[in-house]
Image 1 (spheres, rainbow, N blue to C red):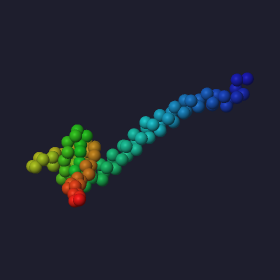
Image 2: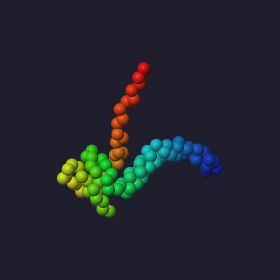
Image 3: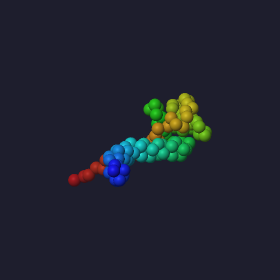
Image 4: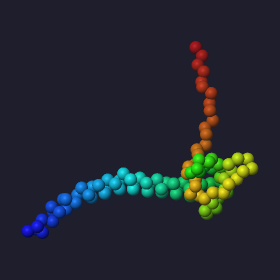
Length: 104
């Protein structure tokens, strides 16, 4: 009467299901969140943003197209790249303030 207890068979599958869930939570879910964030970043580009490409080149967005971005990487030097090459938007640098002097 092996077929009388399907619960035992389900219990034997629990470790496999647990490993699959753990794999999903640790690997697949974070990667899909990163991918969605990157797509949102690439679609929200505006002219004037300073960006870093996946190759490590920095530039300022001069023009945008549906698929391409024109970057100024130096004075008089512009390149066209696909939006997928943009890895990060560089935040504007805060101006340095001199340290406060304390007089005794």
